[in-house]
Amino acid sequence: MRMGTRAAVIGIDAAWTLTQPSGVALAILDDDGWQLRAAAASYQRFLALADEHAVGEPRPLGRMPDVRALIHAGRQLAAAPIDLVAIDMPLSKAPIVGRRQSDDAVSRAYGGPRKSSTHSPSEQRPGVISDALRAQAEREGYCLATASISPPALIEVYPHPALIELARTTERLPYKAQKIRKYWPSLSNQQRREKLVTQWRDIVDLLETEIFGVKDMLPPIEIKASAVELKPFEDMLDAIVCCWVAICALDGRAIPFGDETSAIWIPAPLCAAKNATLALRK
Image 1: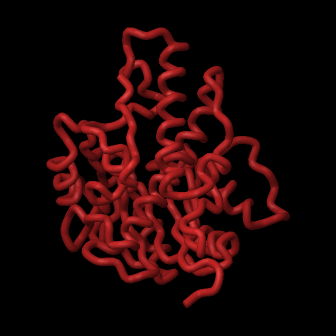
Image 2: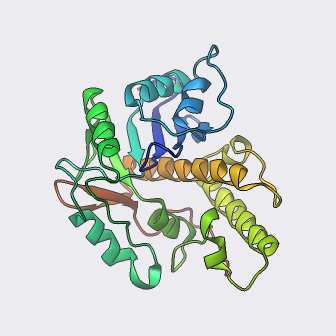
Image 3: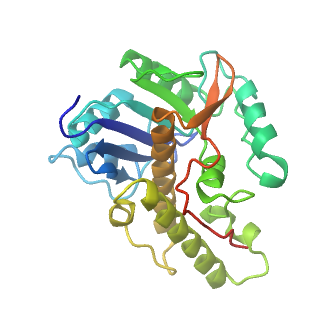
C-alpha cells in the first residue's frame, strides 16, 4: 500500500479547438479521503503549478495538449503516480468521423427531457486534438478504457449527465455562462448572472461533499464578473466534475456507455452522497 497519497486522478475539460483554453484539475486520495490538490484554467497554468520557475500566463490560452507534461506535473503535485485521466472530449480507438455508439447510448439515456444529449463529433472537431490526446496518453501507458478499468488508464467523461447524477435532478443543470440568455430569457442580464453564480455555488457545495477542498481551491466569483472572468471558473468547475467521475470509475461506481471502441463513463445513479440535494434553478 502507498504511504501518504493512495490514489490520484486528473480531470481535463478539453477544448475542441486550439483557440480555447482547457481546464485541468487534480484530486488525490489519502487517509482523510479524496481532496482537490490543484485546479487551473488552462494547460499552461496547470503545468506552472508544478514549476516554480514558470512564467505566468496573463490569461488562460488555448494550445495543443502535452499529456506527458500534464501527467508529470500531476505526479509532482500529488507526490504519487496518476491512476486515471478523465477527459471531457470524444475519444476512440478508431478514427472519429461522426457520431459513435457511445454518443447515441448517452443520448438515449440522457437526451430528450433530460436535455443532455452529446454533441456530434466530426473528423474536424475535435479531430487532431482528440487523436493527439489519446496517442500521447497511450505512450505514457494510459490506454483508453471502454469496458473495465485497470489503472493507469484514460477514460472519456461528460459533465452534463454526471451533474444530473450528482445533483439528483431530472434534467441538465443550467450552468453554462454562454447560455444564460437561453436559460432565463425573461430576466435581466443582472438577474441572469445572479442565477448563474448561485447555480455555480450550489454545484461547488455538492462537489465539496465528494472532494474536500473544492471551495477553497476555486477563486471567489462575483455577480459583476466579466465574461473573461466567468469562463475560467466554468472550465475549472468542469475539470473538477471530470475528477469526480474518475473517482467514481476507480471505485466501480460509474457505467461505460458505448462499445469496445469508445465509451463515455457516467456515475451510476445514487452515486452521489445520500444527503446531496440541489433544486434545479429555473
